[in-house]
Image 1: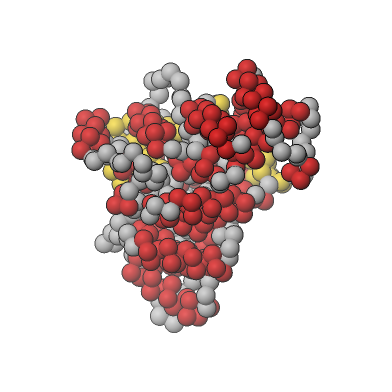
Image 2: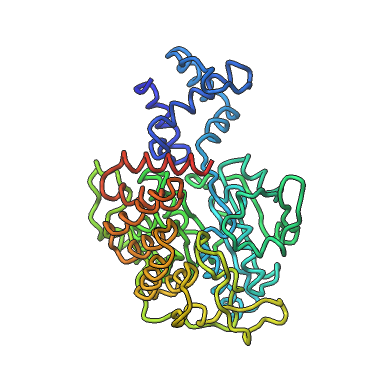
Length: 466
């Protein structure tokens, strides 16, 4: 069936930008088999073991059905959507959004801060942005969040605002008590937060007519890795055109090279994976100056473009309006306890503590270091100190998957790809389903030319998330 699948692969690339190979070697075959049998069984879903092989005649008939039915096109596309998301995923991005949005609003009180989440999946990302902005002191009238996704099913779920346990990962879930109420099937998000986000069904690869709206912040994270290079380029150009002149784009940690390939400039915020847009002429000049990649190159970015987080001399200065303590505590796997806060710095109106530079201070002598200490240091760009704390932690507790993963992130940020890969492998040895280690190692393999190995790891990550 492989040769006859090529037309479906080409169609999917044109319609969505998704490269089926990025989801695993057999993913397209399984998806086509599922849809053919669903139609033959009048929508009844058969177990995989009960599905007979799909004949060439059945596949030809399905191709005709696909071209004739918009409903069937949507049904097939739904199988390729990757709904892997949770609240405050990569927390430093939301801490950066809250801090910069508060600064912009303070400088121009009448300005409406605009945020775009594309794609938004089942809503965790745009709702996280809304909660972060509310906690930073902004009123709902002072910001607007648009959220788009190709999946009508995901949009419907996002609008309901009801989430199960998988949407709350790690132990830093203090926000749930303030913004959610328990429900029979999970937790229901407060209407005040839901009203801050406007959802719309749209195709990121083919966004349609320009509405004229420009955004201060755009989130496009952990989706470009599933696109082929042409679709990546089209999406980045489109998103760049939607940003205001001083706008900021947040991408996933494995997608930084795509932004850099288009002349975007790293915001140099450790572990936020944020980029500034350049003036139109500068972008064109930077892109034209880069050598074209060979046509046979499968990897969407080159090794030199892979890393964006550069060490900084000292933690970023504290601003008058800062995100609450729980928002700045780093990546989910290491958020077991909140970081140290300055109790004198307290937002009386919001009733919440404010993180200061003390949160990233070196660990005091005689106090057992924790992963949270190392994460806070890494977030502040103090990579040497973070590695020292990790060494102390490992000497005390022994091999630890999350410690290896954080070591890998730091090595990754410093451009030490081989060392980062070793750490990710150690994390996976201890915890084979470690989703972040799987996806980060897949990126390193892809950049190094091992596309088959990268696809295998991404398929493992997909299964571990399911």
